[in-house]
Amino acid sequence: MELASGPAEDVMGSVMMQFAGGRGAELSARLDLPDGVPRAFALFAHCFTCSKDTKAASYVARAMAEAGFGVLRFDFTGLGGSGGDFASTNFSSNVDDLVAAADWLRAHHGAPAVLVGHSLGGAAVIAAAHRISDARAVVTIGAPCDPGHVRKQFERDLALIEREGEAQVSIAGRAFTISRAFLDDLDGQQQVQRIRALGRALLVMHSPVDGVVAVDNARRVFEAAMHPKSFVSLDGADHMLSRVEDARFAAGVIAAWAGRYVEPAAAGSDQVPAGLVRVAERGTGKFANAVSTARHTILADEPVTVGGTDLGLSPYELLQAALGACTTMTLRMYADMKKLPVRRISVDLRHDKVHAEDCVDCESATAKIDRIERVLRIDGELDESQRERLLAIADRCPVHRTLHGSVEVLTRLESSASRGDT
Image 1 (cartoon, one colour):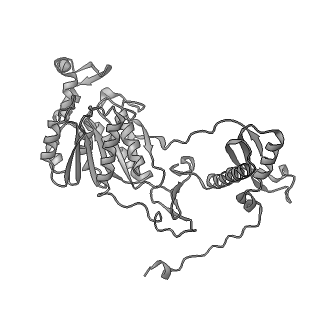
Image 2: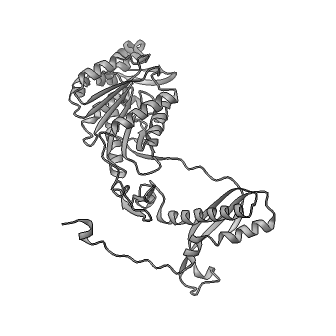
Image 3: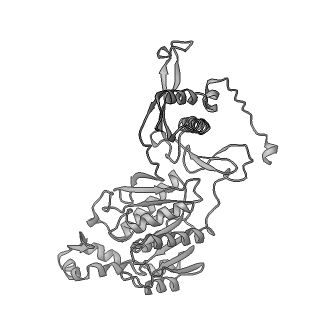
């Protein structure tokens, strides 16, 4: 071990990834995760010519993650960080991208129980729903009833597009190429029939002062839909949900409403007796596990490079975390007891397999041994003798002693009778 100084890195509750879209382009995506086991997974579709990182997408996804949902948001082909050419896309290709995103989410983490779409993304999730059979609920935010509504954003160029076959138009200050094939695809959408045949719960959210997609669109969607259906007014919000309080309100309503339609959290996350740690596969990836106690749940996983989905710490990272947490807690107890001016304690840990010949205390010089290196950071006005004393105290933490002691692990199979199997 050695002592050092410096800030610790922040841990973000989201994971970046890429996957193939519906027509082959590499799509850029972000998975926002709650602190514990996700109660369900949701798929978020952004607005026309937007990206996964707009305020509406970011605010809603993060707020839903705080409410316990895992939320996958991604850039459609040709937008944001995704590959492909936007000029070759259309509404139907967006729907294909949504289906591909649902397939990826289902294979690597969990089935998309909730589909959420903002603006044209709302129309897209309705169109995609019949191809995502495990989605239990659909949510639209400021969505048009007819996908052709987006024509209004470049209506001055419609004649040029019809005449020339395509034209470069300006949307929200950015240039996009719109083709006649794009318009033809919009004209071919049978959206009202899709809404009527949706076959799952629908939540329509819309602001009565939406200046981009008039609230009458919400009325038309709601009237076309069959029950169960709900409408919530986003009173005072603009179309882009640019105020965080509007997006958080929308996300809170979505989380509460969708809770009626999603499956409960993975088994093993509740009713764990006090003093017991339960580790159970989540069924959402090859190695993903829920690690639960009577009051807390965290995730364990392996990196993508070895076949995992990187949802949580690996087993060796959990081991290092246990040693690191025990170290800082022991040092804090000692510093407070001795009234030492310690402001903050942190520790970096690294696990390696090293040759025993590098270890002066090892009995064998041929095998490899496990070595964990700790680097302590202790902020405070301490003299050298106080720092050396704290360094010595670090080796007295209970987990450190356990790792250096004789540990007996007894493993047995639970009987079928105790499980209630027949």
